[in-house]
Each structure stands twice: as C-alpha cells, then as structure tokens.
Image (cartoon, rainbow, N blue to C red):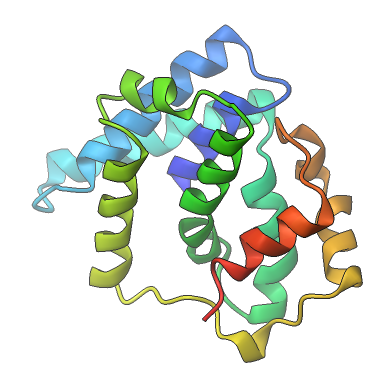
Amino acid sequence: DAYSHGFESYFSRMTNEFSKILSTAACGDIYFSLDSDGSSHDIEKLLYSSYLAGLAQSVTSVGLIHAISHTISPICKISHGYINSLLIIPVMKFYKDKDLDIDSFLKKQGIDGLNHLEEKIGSLLKSNNIVMVDKNSLTINDDLIQDIKNDICFKTSPVLPNSEEIIKILESIIE
C-alpha cells in the first residue's frame, strides 16, 4: 500500500517536485526493505519510508490503483492494501503503454525496469499467500465501472482510462 502511495503520488495530476522527491525516496527504500531479514533497523526504515509516501500522497492525492481499490475492496471483502498490491503492476503497465515514463521512475529508485519490480512483487505475493481476486466475488458491469470513475482518486490519475481499459485491468487481477 505504501509503495502504491508513493508511485501514484509521483504520477498524480497534482504532483510537484517536492512530492516527487518524497515518492522516489519512499518507493526506493520500500523496494529494498522488502528483502529485509526482519531486523529492527529494516522495519524502522520501512516505517519511515511508508511515512514519506504518506506525506507525498497527502500533497498530491493518489490515482487509478486507489480508485479501483476503494471501489472493489468492500465488494470482494478483501483489504485495500491487498487489492493495491495486485494492481501495482497492471496499472504501471497500462501507464507505460500510455507513454508515461515508468522506467525513469524505477531507475531513480535503483530498480532496473518494470520486469524486475514485477518479479519481486510476484515473489512477495506468492510468499505471503496473496492470490488473485476470486471471479465469483466480483461482477464487472457498467455500474462497477462508473463507481470506479466516480471515485475521487480517479480524477488525479495521470491517464483516465476508458471503460474497456478499466475492464482489462480488473480482469488482470481476477482468477
């Protein structure tokens, strides 16, 4: 969840240089803290990084990940952070396809491309038993899509997907 706060703040329609500095620092530290051995120093660093991502988010708002999560989390009865962890990669891929410079954002954190982030997140999801959304818990229809578009965070997304694009993102997290 904290990583998604930093990522979405960085690309928010309301972003600024201060929030970009906070976002980059937070996301980089979060990424590298996820390999921690659980030491108190690593956990403390992760907490500080989460705080920095929250500061960035409070200045800029978040975007598409949160708009979707706010809408489907209560329907699926799955936590907001859980849903966000499933959405990070599909939304990054969507933005990259729309010519947002995701690679530069990742390079500023010391991450060598979207594939490396996808591998790490995939490994973390697997090791923490985070599975895709059950197809029986979510019905994708016009009302659901409209609810996502009506979420306040949708408006600060750097790219406003159309209904078909939202459906494609949703289908990527459903099994």
